[in-house]
Length: 350
Ligand code: NAP
Ligand code: ZN
Ligand code: ZN
Image 1: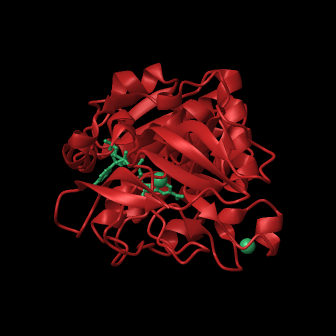
Image 2: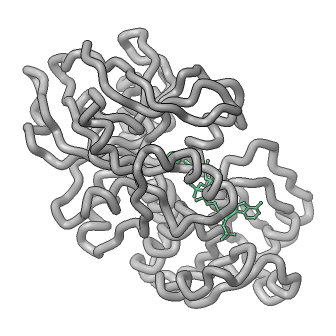
């Protein structure tokens, strides 16, 4: 075991503080990663603040990890020391169920996926995430980050990127697709970039027009404020697919009306309370509601290659670890353009 500096939450109400955690020795199939950057996902905040139930404290969040391999186990074949590497939302799964065999580890029906933080690993230890100087991960749950992608702007692809890429692929978005993106935050801005790159016509629905210039620069064809009631009249029956990336509960009865006949509303946001769906909002136009969770290892690697080929990365604000608590407040206030990424260099030094 080795020790490493990290930022941990100790309760749902206290700020995260600097601490020391342990990492396991590098087993035969493990790689040790010096973490260079870790993105702040809204899921980190939901988890720390116990929106989804009581997590296991102390909790080191962070599942958008980018770094460099510093050590490999004796049986490792996919990585070598010096490789640029990423880790996303899970670090293990049963590997035997149909879902794991299909490369859809996020839907593992055996043991379930082992989250990058706050889960119990095979060694019985509680997993701890990327707000730290290093991590040890089984090589089968790590990704190669292509040279074309800067590590800091690539980190958010490991969660926000794959979470938006996967449904766009699943519902076969391409030229001619009409895509609506609700919420221009971490997930939302990557949804816009990815859908535009796939050739779709993209519309953003944001709370106000404050970020309109950015939305259009990212490639959206149009941009609408949801605080303007006319938006829902203008956009009625307009989309083949809508990605809802909002972290809070919305009045779905209104938002569903923007989906066209036989279209799908894909819930990506994971707010604290249940979704309330008035029946006629889906009966009327034979609309569907679905959800989608991150993506499996093969698709995450495919997404990284796609982003490298097309120059897609996250728009980021790089911060020092001692700014994490302020960053959390700004994310909650939708005051982020468009992902905070922690430079973990000081944590590597101890
Ligand atoms: P984020 O950066 O905070 O973005 C969320 C956006 O939602 C905000 O930028 C804001 O956009 C909008 N928003 C926030 N509060 C709102 C409110 N009260 N009413 C209307 N709009 C509001 O968060 P994120 O990291 O992208 O994550 C978004 C959600 O996805 C979170 O719930 C997270 O847990 C979830 N998530 C799910 C998966 C998955 O696998 N399905 C993966 C990662 C994250 P505007 O300012 O443009 O209105
Ligand atoms: Zn996330
Ligand atoms: Zn499985």
